[in-house]
Image (cartoon, rainbow, N blue to C red; front, top):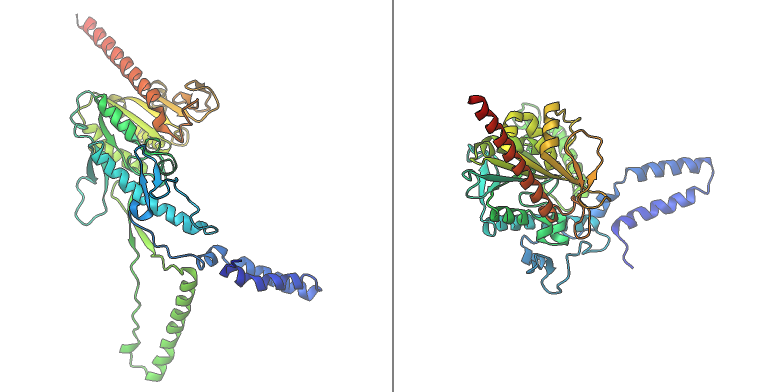
Length: 415
Protein backbone atom coordinates (compact mmCIF):
# COMPACT_ATOMS: atom_id res chain seq x y z
CA UNK A 1 0.00 0.00 0.00
CA UNK A 2 1.42 3.37 -1.09
CA UNK A 3 0.84 6.36 1.24
CA UNK A 4 1.68 9.80 -0.10
CA UNK A 5 3.72 12.35 1.83
CA UNK A 6 0.75 14.72 2.02
CA UNK A 7 -1.36 11.99 3.67
CA UNK A 8 1.34 11.37 6.29
CA UNK A 9 1.46 15.11 7.07
CA UNK A 10 -2.30 15.44 7.46
CA UNK A 11 -2.99 12.10 9.24
CA UNK A 12 -2.07 13.29 12.78
CA UNK A 13 -4.29 16.37 12.35
CA UNK A 14 -7.25 14.27 11.25
CA UNK A 15 -6.77 11.90 14.22
CA UNK A 16 -6.55 14.84 16.64
CA UNK A 17 -9.76 16.34 15.23
CA UNK A 18 -11.62 13.03 15.64
CA UNK A 19 -10.52 12.84 19.29
CA UNK A 20 -11.28 16.49 20.04
CA UNK A 21 -14.80 16.37 18.58
CA UNK A 22 -15.77 13.92 21.36
CA UNK A 23 -14.75 16.38 24.11
CA UNK A 24 -16.30 19.45 25.80
CA UNK A 25 -16.29 23.21 25.01
CA UNK A 26 -12.52 23.59 25.43
CA UNK A 27 -11.94 20.76 23.05
CA UNK A 28 -14.30 22.38 20.51
CA UNK A 29 -12.10 25.49 20.55
CA UNK A 30 -9.11 23.33 19.73
CA UNK A 31 -11.13 21.71 16.94
CA UNK A 32 -11.88 25.13 15.47
CA UNK A 33 -8.18 26.00 15.58
CA UNK A 34 -7.27 22.74 13.83
CA UNK A 35 -9.89 23.35 11.15
CA UNK A 36 -8.39 26.79 10.60
CA UNK A 37 -4.96 25.18 10.25
CA UNK A 38 -6.28 22.71 7.68
CA UNK A 39 -7.86 25.53 5.68
CA UNK A 40 -4.45 27.17 5.40
CA UNK A 41 -2.79 24.07 3.96
CA UNK A 42 -2.58 24.07 0.18
CA UNK A 43 -3.08 20.42 -0.77
CA UNK A 44 -2.03 21.05 -4.37
CA UNK A 45 1.28 22.39 -3.14
CA UNK A 46 1.73 19.41 -0.83
CA UNK A 47 1.08 17.05 -3.73
CA UNK A 48 3.98 18.59 -5.62
CA UNK A 49 6.32 16.98 -3.12
CA UNK A 50 5.23 13.55 -4.34
CA UNK A 51 5.84 14.32 -8.01
CA UNK A 52 8.57 12.89 -10.19
CA UNK A 53 10.75 15.58 -11.85
CA UNK A 54 9.02 17.69 -14.50
CA UNK A 55 11.64 16.67 -17.02
CA UNK A 56 10.05 15.66 -20.33
CA UNK A 57 11.43 14.79 -23.78
CA UNK A 58 11.58 17.50 -26.44
CA UNK A 59 10.80 15.24 -29.43
CA UNK A 60 7.99 12.89 -30.41
CA UNK A 61 10.53 10.07 -30.53
CA UNK A 62 11.51 10.88 -26.95
CA UNK A 63 7.88 10.40 -25.93
CA UNK A 64 7.90 7.18 -27.98
CA UNK A 65 5.03 8.44 -30.15
CA UNK A 66 4.69 9.05 -33.90
CA UNK A 67 1.97 9.88 -36.44
CA UNK A 68 1.02 6.92 -38.61
CA UNK A 69 -0.02 7.00 -42.28
CA UNK A 70 -3.58 7.99 -41.24
CA UNK A 71 -2.27 10.96 -39.28
CA UNK A 72 -3.06 9.32 -35.93
CA UNK A 73 -0.73 9.68 -32.95
CA UNK A 74 0.31 6.21 -31.83
CA UNK A 75 2.85 4.70 -29.43
CA UNK A 76 5.86 3.46 -31.38
CA UNK A 77 6.06 0.10 -29.53
CA UNK A 78 2.46 -0.74 -28.65
CA UNK A 79 0.52 1.07 -31.39
CA UNK A 80 -1.85 2.40 -28.71
CA UNK A 81 -3.32 5.94 -28.69
CA UNK A 82 -1.95 8.57 -26.35
CA UNK A 83 -2.53 7.86 -22.64
CA UNK A 84 -3.08 10.93 -20.48
CA UNK A 85 -2.98 9.18 -17.08
CA UNK A 86 0.54 7.90 -17.53
CA UNK A 87 1.04 7.96 -13.73
CA UNK A 88 -1.97 7.27 -11.53
CA UNK A 89 -2.98 9.90 -8.95
CA UNK A 90 -0.57 12.49 -10.35
CA UNK A 91 -2.93 14.68 -12.35
CA UNK A 92 -0.71 17.76 -12.27
CA UNK A 93 2.33 15.81 -13.49
CA UNK A 94 0.23 14.15 -16.23
CA UNK A 95 -1.07 17.58 -17.30
CA UNK A 96 2.49 18.96 -17.50
CA UNK A 97 3.48 15.96 -19.61
CA UNK A 98 0.48 16.54 -21.90
CA UNK A 99 1.44 20.21 -22.29
CA UNK A 100 5.04 19.30 -23.11
CA UNK A 101 3.81 16.93 -25.83
CA UNK A 102 1.48 19.66 -27.08
CA UNK A 103 4.39 22.05 -27.57
CA UNK A 104 6.18 19.45 -29.67
CA UNK A 105 3.05 18.93 -31.78
CA UNK A 106 2.76 22.68 -32.35
CA UNK A 107 6.26 22.69 -33.86
CA UNK A 108 5.41 19.56 -35.85
CA UNK A 109 2.36 21.29 -37.39
CA UNK A 110 4.52 24.32 -38.24
CA UNK A 111 6.83 21.97 -40.14
CA UNK A 112 3.88 20.43 -42.00
CA UNK A 113 2.66 23.89 -43.04
CA UNK A 114 6.03 24.60 -44.62
CA UNK A 115 6.85 21.17 -46.05
CA UNK A 116 3.47 19.63 -46.98
CA UNK A 117 1.52 22.82 -47.71
CA UNK A 118 4.44 24.83 -49.16
CA UNK A 119 3.60 27.87 -47.02
CA UNK A 120 6.25 30.36 -46.02
CA UNK A 121 6.75 31.63 -42.49
CA UNK A 122 6.65 35.45 -42.26
CA UNK A 123 7.84 37.30 -39.14
CA UNK A 124 5.82 40.11 -37.58
CA UNK A 125 6.01 42.97 -36.82
CA UNK A 126 7.41 43.49 -40.32
CA UNK A 127 9.75 46.23 -39.04
CA UNK A 128 10.82 44.42 -35.85
CA UNK A 129 14.30 45.04 -34.54
CA UNK A 130 16.66 42.15 -33.88
CA UNK A 131 16.12 42.26 -30.12
CA UNK A 132 12.35 42.78 -29.79
CA UNK A 133 9.78 39.95 -29.37
CA UNK A 134 8.37 38.63 -32.64
CA UNK A 135 5.56 36.41 -33.88
CA UNK A 136 4.81 35.01 -37.34
CA UNK A 137 2.09 33.97 -39.77
CA UNK A 138 2.10 31.57 -42.72
CA UNK A 139 1.36 32.48 -46.33
CA UNK A 140 1.26 30.79 -49.71
CA UNK A 141 3.68 32.14 -52.33
CA UNK A 142 0.81 33.83 -54.19
CA UNK A 143 -1.04 35.16 -51.15
CA UNK A 144 -0.40 38.80 -52.04
CA UNK A 145 -0.27 38.42 -55.83
CA UNK A 146 -3.19 36.09 -56.62
CA UNK A 147 -5.59 38.38 -58.55
CA UNK A 148 -8.69 36.22 -58.01
CA UNK A 149 -9.16 34.93 -54.47
CA UNK A 150 -7.52 34.75 -51.07
CA UNK A 151 -8.54 32.58 -48.10
CA UNK A 152 -7.72 33.70 -44.55
CA UNK A 153 -7.89 31.19 -41.65
CA UNK A 154 -8.28 32.20 -37.99
CA UNK A 155 -8.31 29.60 -35.19
CA UNK A 156 -9.87 29.95 -31.73
CA UNK A 157 -8.45 30.79 -28.31
CA UNK A 158 -6.30 28.74 -25.93
CA UNK A 159 -3.13 26.77 -26.61
CA UNK A 160 -3.71 26.31 -30.36
CA UNK A 161 -1.36 28.05 -32.75
CA UNK A 162 -1.18 28.67 -36.50
CA UNK A 163 -2.38 25.66 -38.49
CA UNK A 164 -4.43 24.12 -35.66
CA UNK A 165 -8.13 23.98 -34.88
CA UNK A 166 -7.82 21.88 -31.71
CA UNK A 167 -4.72 20.35 -30.12
CA UNK A 168 -6.83 17.79 -28.28
CA UNK A 169 -8.17 16.46 -31.58
CA UNK A 170 -4.69 16.20 -33.05
CA UNK A 171 -3.56 14.10 -30.08
CA UNK A 172 -6.70 12.00 -29.59
CA UNK A 173 -8.04 11.68 -33.15
CA UNK A 174 -5.89 12.69 -36.11
CA UNK A 175 -4.19 15.54 -37.96
CA UNK A 176 -7.06 16.01 -40.41
CA UNK A 177 -9.52 16.56 -37.55
CA UNK A 178 -7.40 18.91 -35.49
CA UNK A 179 -5.41 20.94 -38.03
CA UNK A 180 -6.22 23.41 -40.80
CA UNK A 181 -4.18 21.39 -43.30
CA UNK A 182 -7.21 19.91 -45.17
CA UNK A 183 -8.60 23.44 -45.61
CA UNK A 184 -5.26 24.76 -46.82
CA UNK A 185 -4.59 22.00 -49.33
CA UNK A 186 -8.07 22.09 -50.80
CA UNK A 187 -8.05 25.88 -51.01
CA UNK A 188 -4.73 25.86 -52.86
CA UNK A 189 -6.01 23.13 -55.22
CA UNK A 190 -8.98 25.38 -55.99
CA UNK A 191 -6.74 28.32 -56.85
CA UNK A 192 -6.83 30.33 -53.63
CA UNK A 193 -3.96 32.21 -52.11
CA UNK A 194 -3.81 31.41 -48.38
CA UNK A 195 -2.91 33.33 -45.21
CA UNK A 196 -2.89 31.51 -41.86
CA UNK A 197 -3.12 33.79 -38.84
CA UNK A 198 -1.47 33.09 -35.48
CA UNK A 199 -3.63 35.12 -33.06
CA UNK A 200 -2.60 33.40 -29.80
CA UNK A 201 1.12 34.06 -30.22
CA UNK A 202 0.94 37.36 -28.33
CA UNK A 203 4.09 37.31 -26.19
CA UNK A 204 7.31 35.50 -25.47
CA UNK A 205 8.19 34.16 -22.03
CA UNK A 206 11.54 34.81 -20.40
CA UNK A 207 12.80 33.89 -16.97
CA UNK A 208 12.27 36.55 -14.34
CA UNK A 209 15.55 38.20 -13.41
CA UNK A 210 16.71 37.50 -9.87
CA UNK A 211 16.82 40.64 -7.78
CA UNK A 212 19.98 40.90 -5.68
CA UNK A 213 19.74 43.31 -2.76
CA UNK A 214 23.14 44.64 -1.84
CA UNK A 215 23.73 45.48 1.79
CA UNK A 216 24.84 49.06 2.37
CA UNK A 217 26.17 48.31 5.84
CA UNK A 218 29.71 47.61 4.59
CA UNK A 219 30.26 51.27 3.81
CA UNK A 220 28.75 52.40 7.10
CA UNK A 221 30.72 53.99 9.90
CA UNK A 222 28.71 52.02 12.45
CA UNK A 223 30.54 49.73 14.87
CA UNK A 224 31.05 46.14 13.67
CA UNK A 225 28.85 44.70 16.45
CA UNK A 226 25.90 46.92 15.46
CA UNK A 227 26.34 46.11 11.76
CA UNK A 228 26.36 42.39 12.58
CA UNK A 229 23.05 42.67 14.47
CA UNK A 230 21.46 44.58 11.55
CA UNK A 231 22.75 42.10 8.96
CA UNK A 232 21.38 39.16 10.93
CA UNK A 233 17.74 40.23 10.33
CA UNK A 234 17.78 40.04 6.47
CA UNK A 235 19.80 36.83 6.65
CA UNK A 236 17.15 35.21 8.85
CA UNK A 237 14.41 36.54 6.56
CA UNK A 238 16.18 35.10 3.51
CA UNK A 239 16.59 31.76 5.30
CA UNK A 240 12.86 31.59 6.03
CA UNK A 241 12.02 32.67 2.48
CA UNK A 242 14.30 30.01 1.00
CA UNK A 243 12.70 27.37 3.22
CA UNK A 244 9.20 28.45 2.14
CA UNK A 245 10.26 28.50 -1.53
CA UNK A 246 11.59 24.94 -1.19
CA UNK A 247 8.16 23.92 0.15
CA UNK A 248 6.15 26.02 -2.33
CA UNK A 249 8.14 25.08 -5.40
CA UNK A 250 9.89 21.75 -4.76
CA UNK A 251 10.33 21.17 -8.52
CA UNK A 252 12.16 24.50 -8.74
CA UNK A 253 10.08 25.55 -11.71
CA UNK A 254 11.35 28.75 -13.26
CA UNK A 255 9.36 31.90 -12.64
CA UNK A 256 8.58 33.48 -16.00
CA UNK A 257 7.54 36.91 -17.21
CA UNK A 258 5.76 37.85 -20.44
CA UNK A 259 7.09 40.27 -23.05
CA UNK A 260 4.25 41.26 -25.38
CA UNK A 261 4.71 41.51 -29.14
CA UNK A 262 4.25 45.00 -30.51
CA UNK A 263 0.84 45.57 -32.14
CA UNK A 264 0.06 41.86 -31.71
CA UNK A 265 -0.60 41.66 -27.98
CA UNK A 266 -4.07 40.11 -28.39
CA UNK A 267 -6.00 38.13 -31.05
CA UNK A 268 -7.94 41.27 -31.95
CA UNK A 269 -4.76 43.36 -32.38
CA UNK A 270 -3.21 40.56 -34.42
CA UNK A 271 -6.15 40.40 -36.85
CA UNK A 272 -6.04 44.15 -37.45
CA UNK A 273 -2.26 44.09 -37.89
CA UNK A 274 -2.33 41.28 -40.46
CA UNK A 275 -5.15 43.02 -42.29
CA UNK A 276 -3.26 46.32 -42.51
CA UNK A 277 0.10 44.86 -43.51
CA UNK A 278 -0.89 41.88 -45.66
CA UNK A 279 -4.56 41.27 -46.54
CA UNK A 280 -5.34 44.89 -47.44
CA UNK A 281 -2.22 44.91 -49.64
CA UNK A 282 -3.17 41.73 -51.51
CA UNK A 283 -4.24 41.80 -55.16
CA UNK A 284 -7.16 39.39 -54.68
CA UNK A 285 -10.53 40.59 -55.93
CA UNK A 286 -12.30 38.27 -53.49
CA UNK A 287 -11.14 37.65 -49.91
CA UNK A 288 -12.75 34.86 -47.88
CA UNK A 289 -12.46 34.33 -44.13
CA UNK A 290 -12.87 31.04 -42.22
CA UNK A 291 -12.84 31.67 -38.47
CA UNK A 292 -13.43 29.31 -35.56
CA UNK A 293 -14.65 30.18 -32.04
CA UNK A 294 -12.75 33.26 -30.77
CA UNK A 295 -11.51 33.80 -34.32
CA UNK A 296 -15.06 34.94 -35.13
CA UNK A 297 -14.89 37.56 -32.39
CA UNK A 298 -11.54 38.75 -33.76
CA UNK A 299 -13.07 39.09 -37.23
CA UNK A 300 -16.01 41.17 -35.91
CA UNK A 301 -13.53 43.41 -34.10
CA UNK A 302 -11.63 43.78 -37.38
CA UNK A 303 -14.88 44.87 -39.06
CA UNK A 304 -15.50 47.44 -36.35
CA UNK A 305 -11.99 48.85 -36.75
CA UNK A 306 -11.82 48.68 -40.58
CA UNK A 307 -15.46 48.56 -41.70
CA UNK A 308 -15.19 50.28 -45.08
CA UNK A 309 -12.04 48.39 -46.09
CA UNK A 310 -13.45 45.00 -45.08
CA UNK A 311 -16.70 45.59 -46.94
CA UNK A 312 -14.86 46.57 -50.11
CA UNK A 313 -12.55 43.55 -50.10
CA UNK A 314 -14.20 40.62 -48.27
CA UNK A 315 -16.70 38.55 -50.25
CA UNK A 316 -17.82 36.00 -47.64
CA UNK A 317 -17.13 34.78 -44.10
CA UNK A 318 -17.65 31.26 -42.75
CA UNK A 319 -17.71 30.91 -38.96
CA UNK A 320 -17.77 27.74 -36.85
CA UNK A 321 -19.11 28.06 -33.30
CA UNK A 322 -18.10 31.70 -33.25
CA UNK A 323 -18.25 33.37 -29.83
CA UNK A 324 -18.65 36.90 -31.16
CA UNK A 325 -21.42 39.09 -29.75
CA UNK A 326 -22.49 42.13 -31.77
CA UNK A 327 -24.08 43.75 -28.70
CA UNK A 328 -21.09 43.39 -26.36
CA UNK A 329 -18.69 44.36 -29.14
CA UNK A 330 -20.92 47.30 -30.05
CA UNK A 331 -21.05 46.49 -33.75
CA UNK A 332 -23.07 49.13 -35.60
CA UNK A 333 -26.21 48.61 -37.66
CA UNK A 334 -24.37 48.67 -40.99
CA UNK A 335 -21.99 45.94 -39.79
CA UNK A 336 -24.86 43.76 -38.61
CA UNK A 337 -26.62 44.16 -41.95
CA UNK A 338 -23.45 43.25 -43.85
CA UNK A 339 -22.95 40.17 -41.68
CA UNK A 340 -26.53 39.01 -42.35
CA UNK A 341 -25.80 39.09 -46.07
CA UNK A 342 -22.22 37.79 -46.15
CA UNK A 343 -21.61 35.58 -43.09
CA UNK A 344 -22.79 32.17 -41.94
CA UNK A 345 -22.11 30.62 -38.53
CA UNK A 346 -22.22 26.80 -38.21
CA UNK A 347 -23.04 26.01 -34.59
CA UNK A 348 -23.40 22.98 -32.34
CA UNK A 349 -27.05 21.98 -32.45
CA UNK A 350 -29.39 19.00 -32.32
CA UNK A 351 -31.09 20.16 -35.52
CA UNK A 352 -30.47 18.29 -38.80
CA UNK A 353 -27.33 19.21 -40.69
CA UNK A 354 -27.21 22.61 -42.41
CA UNK A 355 -30.64 23.76 -41.21
CA UNK A 356 -31.32 27.19 -39.74
CA UNK A 357 -30.92 27.62 -35.99
CA UNK A 358 -32.80 30.35 -34.16
CA UNK A 359 -30.67 33.12 -32.69
CA UNK A 360 -31.28 36.04 -30.36
CA UNK A 361 -28.60 38.13 -32.07
CA UNK A 362 -29.38 40.22 -35.16
CA UNK A 363 -26.30 39.31 -37.14
CA UNK A 364 -25.29 36.41 -39.41
CA UNK A 365 -27.51 33.33 -39.93
CA UNK A 366 -26.78 30.34 -37.72
CA UNK A 367 -26.83 26.85 -39.20
CA UNK A 368 -26.64 23.41 -37.58
CA UNK A 369 -23.33 21.58 -37.82
CA UNK A 370 -24.50 18.19 -36.53
CA UNK A 371 -25.19 15.15 -38.67
CA UNK A 372 -24.03 11.60 -39.30
CA UNK A 373 -20.34 11.76 -40.10
CA UNK A 374 -20.02 15.44 -39.17
CA UNK A 375 -19.48 16.21 -35.51
CA UNK A 376 -20.28 19.57 -34.00
CA UNK A 377 -18.41 22.55 -35.36
CA UNK A 378 -16.52 23.22 -32.14
CA UNK A 379 -14.88 19.79 -32.42
CA UNK A 380 -14.10 19.37 -36.09
CA UNK A 381 -14.27 22.47 -38.30
CA UNK A 382 -12.15 20.58 -40.85
CA UNK A 383 -15.08 18.18 -41.41
CA UNK A 384 -17.20 21.19 -42.42
CA UNK A 385 -15.07 21.99 -45.44
CA UNK A 386 -17.61 21.04 -48.13
CA UNK A 387 -20.41 23.06 -46.53
CA UNK A 388 -18.15 26.04 -46.00
CA UNK A 389 -16.76 25.82 -49.54
CA UNK A 390 -20.30 25.80 -50.96
CA UNK A 391 -21.22 28.87 -48.89
CA UNK A 392 -18.16 30.78 -50.06
CA UNK A 393 -18.79 29.88 -53.71
CA UNK A 394 -22.43 30.95 -53.48
CA UNK A 395 -21.46 34.29 -51.97
CA UNK A 396 -18.85 34.79 -54.70
CA UNK A 397 -21.44 34.09 -57.42
CA UNK A 398 -23.93 36.48 -55.83
CA UNK A 399 -21.22 39.12 -55.48
CA UNK A 400 -20.31 38.72 -59.16
CA UNK A 401 -23.97 39.04 -60.24
CA UNK A 402 -24.45 42.12 -58.03
CA UNK A 403 -21.33 43.71 -59.51
CA UNK A 404 -22.45 43.04 -63.07
CA UNK A 405 -25.91 44.45 -62.33
CA UNK A 406 -24.41 47.63 -60.91
CA UNK A 407 -22.09 47.95 -63.90
CA UNK A 408 -25.05 47.55 -66.26
CA UNK A 409 -26.97 50.22 -64.38
CA UNK A 410 -24.01 52.59 -64.57
CA UNK A 411 -23.72 51.95 -68.32
CA UNK A 412 -27.43 52.70 -68.83
CA UNK A 413 -27.12 55.97 -66.92
CA UNK A 414 -24.08 56.94 -69.01
CA UNK A 415 -25.97 56.40 -72.30
